[in-house]
Image (tube, rainbow, N blue to C red):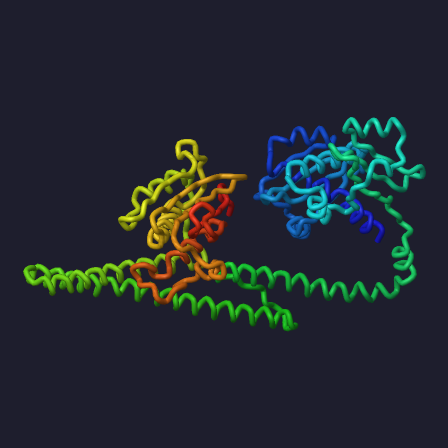
Length: 494
């Protein structure tokens, strides 16, 4: 029991430092040498593909916990945690001294200064990441010697240990304020706690508890697998199944889940096949109608009324053809996992190309005013679909703009963003989420000519979903109309 408690104690103490290291390296991978020197440790990062083989270790790391192990001779400690980008951080320590506490305190202050937040807000945000208290105290309330006071004034991190060695804390002066950041106090591990004594006294009861734990843990492990399969099914992986062996409740639940998943997969497959079949089969009669209308138009060229009606029919046929194309595209993107060919693409050039191809109404001007495409960093995207997403947004903006549509591209923190703004009437805030739903029409009085088919924005949303990004709408700060934004990670990860 004490071994487990000791491991948990060490993990709680190390959790905050590993959090600071991983987030610093996520922003600046080149800082690994500097952090190794500051923490007097060997720090290295493994890519996401090199996950720990032990399922229990991997599961704990993926839940944001820390794993600590020691070498056979007990001289080296190995600490592991998961990086924000999915990589695996490993830190090897040969000695544990005040150096690590000083490095943690200084790194915490640096992150606060870079965050732009108030100190209270920043500490409130990072406090759950630490296994010991974080606070702020006034320097004049600390009982400091002149030497310690001078050290803190010069930016040193002061580590104080009680005389009996049972408690420690770190103090770092906050620049420009008569305050100090306080890490701790941290009490030493107590092997003779009330809990440990209670466990020894009640060992007989716990033997029964161990049997109950074994049963519950077995159920929990199987339920976790069922949860994972349910999560995969919710993400569109319709072939997700679970091992349904056994006649216990979990086994019966697993078999019911498999039957449900098979039924859902069959229904969705039938629906998709029907949509594809109907859409494809409609193309043939549409082509015949268009051909027949063209023959009639050629034979009655001198009748203005018939020519006008035939022109209207041709426009309706063109609209039906475009609607079929929209339905097919939407059906492809709604599948469990469309095949996307991710390539390194200059998104700014794609946006500029879309602007050049745009055919807005005569009174509307479409311009590109984003970052210079010549210096724009590459992004890993599926070029056809990203082109389609920007094209849909530009076409949608052109329908409702009074006179201007502006397209911009930007990159920040490895996040690529495309904004399309117009000076039209905008979209009410209560409809910002509904506007991306399939066949959503916010104003029933709009005609198809102005309002589209109700699929364009839902296609944009699905394209962003498969790029691990999102599409959102708000109000344009410059024009006062609608601003649609596409946001996704610049580097694609499976």
